[in-house]
Image (tube, rainbow, N blue to C red):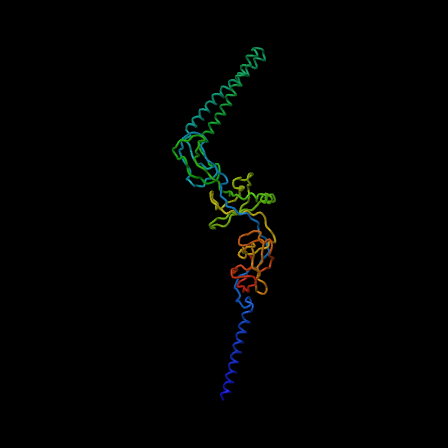
Length: 378
């Protein structure tokens, strides 16, 4: 019996040893399996590369300027007796702004009118006398020198009347200048010389400054390298310009390029441009800063991918492409430019490619992925 027990014990040990060897073999076999096939799929978001028309734009920071600025000054000396507007009011062209004491100028006008009446009477007498002397000369009753003296007196009287008429016109202008009217339609600034003060003609300080803001300009500067493109496309038609507000409280305002400076700034390497906006709603106000977008042309059939898909590496920019077997491929690309949330691709992608837009940090070439949500480039 002892021999049988020993035999059974040996058989049992051999079976246990075989089971252990089998388990270890299976474990080693599993450890040599492809980790890419056994690892869980990485959840990502993907979008399709598309082909569409994309505008080519130049971006800049602009400053709103009035269409016209007029510094209103007095054209005659006197005391301001009344002001017909308030600071900041909108004033219409031709509306009365200030009135200067017109009494001295009215008196001068009356004096000029009286001088004209006197000199016209003298002219009438001189004309009649010239007629009589002309008849006497024809009958040889007077000498030619006597007639020439009378004729000269008549012409002198006529010139005096003409001078009086000019003096009256000048006096009337002086009276009109006492009523100062707005030369443009716009908004009045601060009144710099108040009612009751004496003013001089064309004084250094204006009475008030008026800004015309309908329409209005926005000036901005762009790098001098862009001037060739701007001139090229401006020759083909008006270039569209948009002015957007930094706080986005108002929709962008559309206008057109109206001015290109003839000299570049040597200190900054930029050139100054102006865009004109209708500004009928008066959304743009002088002095405001706006984001200016100048559209040069529309690029057709551009290959576009979401900007979120573009990554930067030691070899340049790249994207992860989702292949049909749900693994990813790292592909180097060449970027043309960014346009909002999109990036225009010069080479490396074709329309229809699926690019990863979210989850790139967990990816490596050949990683398995599960696309949580697919979207096309906007």
